[in-house]
Length: 224
Image (tube, rainbow, N blue to C red; front, top):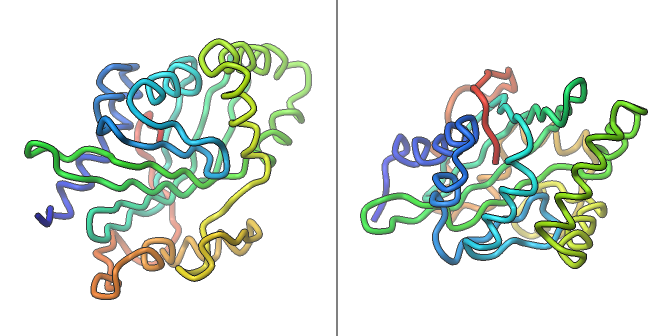
């Protein structure tokens, strides 16, 4: 069953709203029982609702997160968002993280739910920016470490740190495993190549939102 573009975007927009409301149960319920989150891509995936719930507890619950949406692209049952994530870690420490988010959706009992979320952002760059905050970053860093170990365990913490290798969206479907420089990624994402690279040949006309520009627009508190 093909879903209208508006319905797909509405389903994805529930995530920012529920994060703004700090609605943990509602946010987790956006996903199918066998859903997978890769955030960032390159770290260990979170599979199933129990792991997704722990993902929320670790990375979302302690923070205030705002989406600044540059562009949405819809292809088949996939929504790709070009965003800047504004993440309030603690008082006085706020990070701004450029990201490309891919949401794969499916109809479940007449309702659209997320089957996979892939978040492409550069963990090494975020860590470097964080460390430049100096002493102000110490409480936030300590809280993140405690949350990682409490909710994810040693294996989960190591799995998250695997994202330090860094991944950005591939140039096309044949280079799906390749990495690109941040400048290349920025140039490419503005052209919405990510959706086209993963669309079926018949769908590469891409039902895209807005012009081929990267002018940002703000959306109230959101996350992946």
